[in-house]
Image (cartoon, rainbow, N blue to C red; front, side, top):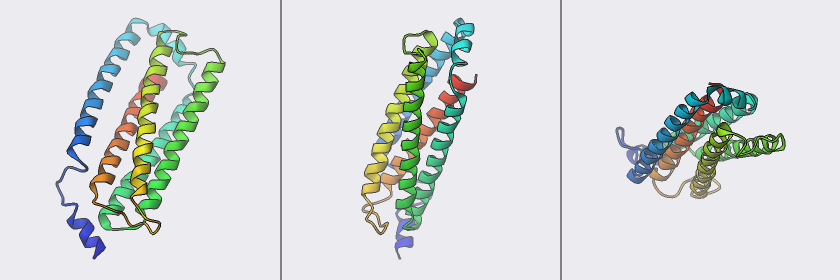
Length: 193
């Protein structure tokens, strides 16, 4: 019965989550698009500086963070699907996503502290300004996303049953996927180009 109620409350073809979440996500995408275009123009003007400064970044840590967020997003997607099916594994999947997202924060803090200890600070050069500002703004998004996922997790009891409809977990998932998408673009722009 619970599984049929979960499917009935999540009809095919609906927009996941609340409409306001999508307005926020759309606005965020526009702001980051402006950031990315600004970065590309600045990089074009100071290509040698950007390439030499970019070589100072640890691609392994960037890749580790990418894998942490991708796996976390997979867990969130599976949690949303579990809620829609009425499956009680959603709580454990959300907890796994939160732990992986927290791993991202730990790796980023380690990376920041290592770079600062090496003398690569916010005002080292033009590239460092973009690096710290963009990854810092993204880190704030990760922390907000973790807070949202924690709140969503709190809506489940210990047995894995949720309180309320699917909109909360769908909206939480949509925001978390935005965080993941933004990091993939930042990783490519800052670490790989």
